[in-house]
Each structure stands twice: as structure tokens, then as C-alpha cells.
Length: 172
Image 1 (tube, rainbow, N blue to C red):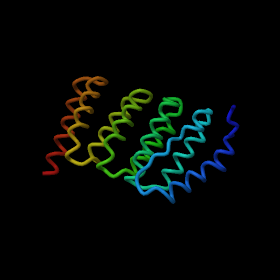
Image 2 (cartoon, rainbow, N blue to C red):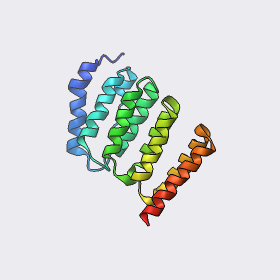
Image 3 (cartoon, one colour):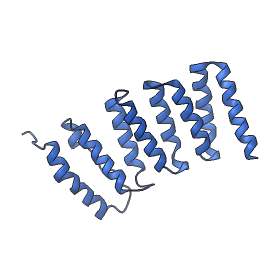
Image 4 (cartoon, one colour):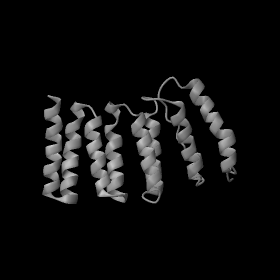
């Protein structure tokens, strides 16, 4: 027996039902797996469900939804919809509190390294240093310096360390 749910039926019947369930019964952070539209290759419908969940919840409840949405989007489209992926990461970063932004920055930079420009990845790492809490910056610096070395060589690593030391000196 085959399922005959169309994209329109999903958006008009199932999506409002999920929204109702989430808004009326979720007392804890719950990620509803969006498998039905993906099983039937309705990718955009499943992404609409993620977007609806993002619009309904705030941090920390939306963290798992963002993680699943970004993972599914990048797995599905890779570099073919890079501008849209960039917009999604920017939106996620704008909503995320600084303490929760480290994984988003690292994933965003990895996306740029794999499908975009190395220069954009370096800009993302630099931005992360200005946003994330002090106790989480060392991990970013390590990755930033290593990737700068891989892409641009020792001269860029020297500039990265100078930038980091300049920020540390300004803060004290």
C-alpha cells in the first residue's frame, strides 16, 4: 500500500497538526522528526516544517530544530544552494546566544570550506572570535589557525595570531 499524501496535503493538514501538538503539549524541548515528507522526496515541505518550528520556539528550545534543519539542508543541497545555506546560518547565528553559537560558526565555516570560498571561512572564524564567550575562544583559535595554515600558509597564521593577541590585549 502506497501513501498518497501530496505536498499540499502535508502543508494544509499535517503541518498545522504538528504545530498544534507542539504549541499545546510540549513542556520540554522536543524535536519532531520530519521523515514523512523526506521519505516521499518532498524536501521543501520538510524544510517548511522546520521553518515553522523555528518561528514558534526560541532558544534553548529551538537549538535542536536548527541543528536538524541545517544538517538536512546541507546534506540535501551541499553547494548547489549556497546562498540559501548562508542565509540560514546567518539567521541561526542571529538567534543563537553567544554561548550556543560555537557549533554554528564551526559548521558554517566548514560549509564555506567545502563549497564556498576559503576567504569567507576565515571571515566566519574571525567573527566567531568576537562573539563567543572567552572560555570558548581557544577552540576557535586552534581551528582558525590550522585552517589558515592549510589554505594560505604561515603568513596568514601570523596575522591570525596577531589579531587574537590584539583582542586579548585590548580586553585587559
